[in-house]
Length: 421
Image (cartoon, rainbow, N blue to C red; front, side):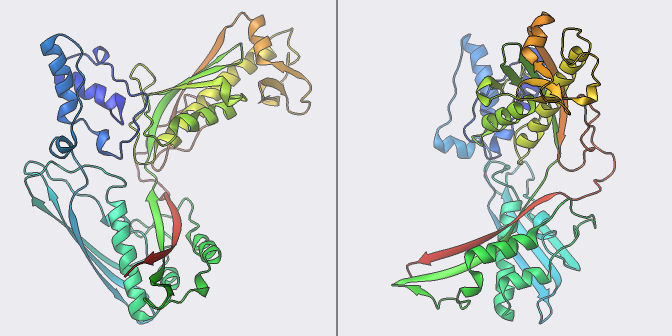
């Protein structure tokens, strides 16, 4: 099982001394990865070596204890935050210190400071990471590495500061709201965190709560209320996809991504159906195989955006081919129409200004003796990539200079917790 079939293929080929096309990696449905399966661990290489030794297929399954000694997991860590602020709650300085375990042979540290340094406007920031080499496996990416524990640390600290200064937790966050990315001064591509605070507070009834800790009860249970900011970076990535539309009205969509149980099959089927003007039941999405178009590993909340972009562009190429065919076909109602005036709606090619003038793409393809039309595209998603192009196979290379905007998703949590003391 792997989150990246293409990356695993390359690694196995290099380690086994094989050509890349001699190695095929298949992961049709992963069911759970959380980051650790983005890398190639020893057992992934041991399986083909064992198969070669015995001359027959080998299935290798790790026991639960072996998962703690044969592959990575989230690091153990301790964080210390020191906040300096005015009496009114305006942050002046923030010091973050983290110590975490790693293996004897490799340095690994989650980048907690990435979130701590960008979530609020702080004039002075200092971050220090220290490593403790222990008799453990090298840790690895696990469920928002760095971002999750970093968010937990800064949000707890902001709550402590608000309590000491007797300031509402929402208000202290608004006082230190970052209108630009504090780490580089770039504007946000979008940020509606203030609106999240306001809407969340309204729905939750934040102003009606008792703000004093330990003063609200539900029978013998203590009741607490809390809120926090939420954010996650938009990681840049790119990948390929192929779309094949058949004259009988169904389509096959292919990309070498993987589904971690996050709904990739469903998402891409929906995107393809919408892009092609088909019913989703007439779309089959194939993924998780190195014989399919290469795309980057699935992780960091990138797969849906990256593959959707690729599929959309590939579908556009299919439709452009059909439009070009229609306007040149003397038997088509769209003969000699300007390609820019033709649109695709619900399996039909038709004029924008006169939707009744057009035909089903299947009829057009049958007259041309075409069983299918294929489109392929390189799509991109996230920070550091050129703006999307209107046509497939566009140049989507990563920018050499820094992105002009910082890209993060933002939100706000509001919680009510009952505890038996």
